[in-house]
Image (cartoon, rainbow, N blue to C red):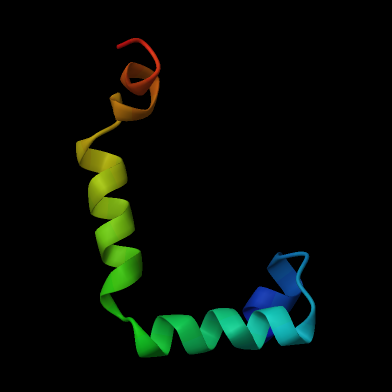
Length: 49
């Protein structure tokens, strides 16, 4: 909690909410980063179709 409070512009309630989210859905951050790394062009190609 200290790290997020020092590094981010979030209230204590928002920090606690983020911590709870990662505890409840541990695969979410991994899935997000996997998709982000594997599909870097998908955001730019969505509008060109």
